[in-house]
Image 1 (cartoon, rainbow, N blue to C red):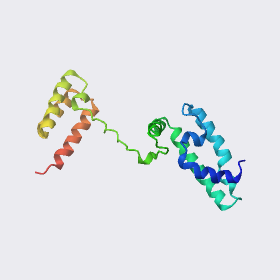
Image 2: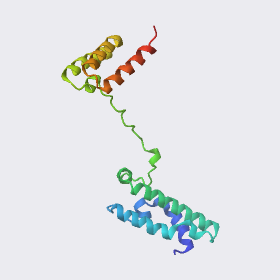
Image 3: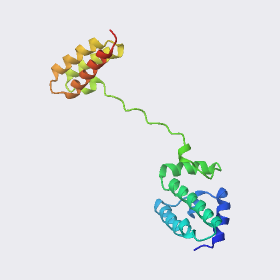
Image 4: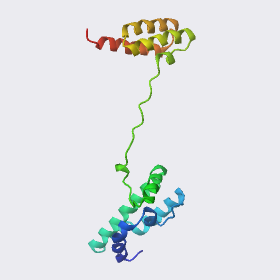
Length: 174
């Protein structure tokens, strides 16, 4: 077990240490090596081991452990580790995953009515419905979807699209 004063010095040096230095791993280390290093770090730095020491030592141990957990959370996730490596190359020693700009994934593209149709004739009729919807001519699109469902009576997707179109027509102002 490290000397109690070690944690006070370690806590003071945290602002100058990279996550790799905190966990004592090389930047080329594998995920398994990072996990093993964190396990070793946790055994020697867990603050519960220092509850009987002076409050300042316990506080320092808690601070060191907290930073070690932060390091592990970044280095154990390949996407965050890659971002951290880029930040580290620019001289940034810490990475706040919550502060990273997150780009939401694009919404899933809804299938066109034509893509919902299964037969050649059904696809031809459904393509007309798609064009009418694009032009805002919902009543004409409704007629085309009805024709497509007559062509493909067992196509549940077309029936669902027709039901959705009925709802849209009902919500339109008169």
